[in-house]
View (tube, rainbow over the protein chains, first blue to last red):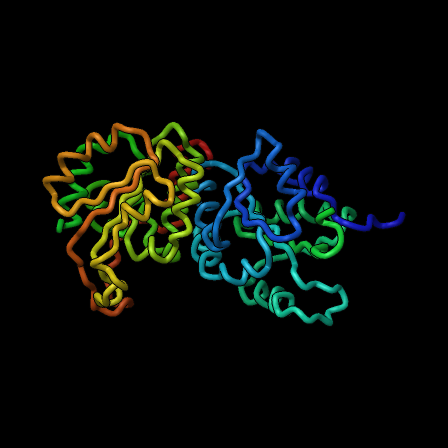
Length: 170
Length: 193
């Protein structure tokens, strides 16, 4: 069976719903507008927009403490900025959460010209955060795997969206 | 200026069943109350308490959530204020303890600390109500009305610094529960754990 060529926003939405996500804490990047429109149209999903990605970690922790199931949607640049907040508010409080992280600069073959991509996986390994790469609709069950792992370990788990430049948008 | 312990005693008389995130007032608040709806987290990562308070208030819209934040935290994350104002949780009461210094690191001054209008910043960010108080009498008089009206409300309180110069490793721990335990206790009490 031929692999789907891209990761559609509908697939991401389906994964969110399937895994019981109640709140999306997010900061837009250039590739997520169609997903934003889908999320905005869903009356059961609350969107909490932040002005800097690190702020999202404590908001998500508060939502979790109050019994909700938040998810974070940010770009790798913002994840790099958020290091101390991920450490303190998510890892420190044992918040089981999935962060979907746009993998800016990802090229699949590893030869890239964007340092955001260069440091993304190194950052995650330094923090000992599990991560899964999703490039197209055929990979989308890895998102569920990430949710399951987050619940089991009570830790943040990252889904890297390696489709930033060809298809996550339309 | 006020003593943090004094203003917390005043607040305690009006707390009702509110969830209290004690933030920078945690050491004093724990002596007043340390039940499952008291949330002494210490300092998971500076600048994040406002976000935690917002998240909790959104998750529990039928319970009042009270946060004792600080000016140092707020200045580190000013961008959280528009997010709080946009979400506008009517159950969120956001106090800051403004001692004008970084007390836990030895009392170094917060930049331009004597000239910042924190209530003005909150109001400009979209909080519908914001107040500054420097005297305990004024705070005591206005507090019941502040807590009776809907949030989000922002209240900046000038407090005397309680500077710590003891090396961190030698400080006496005032928290009786780990931050993780505090969160799990709350989730259990809310039926979410």
